[in-house]
Image (tube, rainbow, N blue to C red; front, side):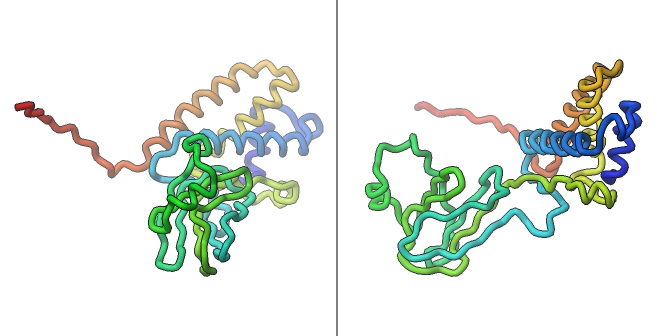
Length: 229
């Protein structure tokens, strides 16, 4: 569905025109439910990772390493870190996360024990701290794989009317139903409970769908006898 279709669907489900359920309120509700749908997908997805198809690039960020600099800024749109790779000069190596609560060591003690062949990283709000600290400049030495926010609708895109949500068409209607439910609550419509039921049923199907997209992984249980003699 395009954003024009979504708005038509909202009018159909609520019986409200744009003079009652205002375009600005609809836009806020559409984007709020788009975000909610995104959180459902992230919570449910299997090995087939989701990313909004309205982006022209992939959720992979690369930056240069600077000698004696161990802290770098994260992309503003990042939601969740999936993998960190660091190149100290001899090729990319996967870095493992380091929780602040997992160790009683100071930063200086960590730097003494962690090597470039088994690097660590720690995320502080909008920055990533690398261990060990690079000792030389490396072009493209830090590479991040992450989940990012969806590409929300703008008022200009509502006017144009052609943009679609960047996810499987099967679930576009979730956004329209969610925005309709918001309108039903605001205007105390008679079908508020019905819209909530529609929303819950679709959420259940969305979770099942995104949790089973990778179907070629097969699991097999085998018997095992432990010999204690």
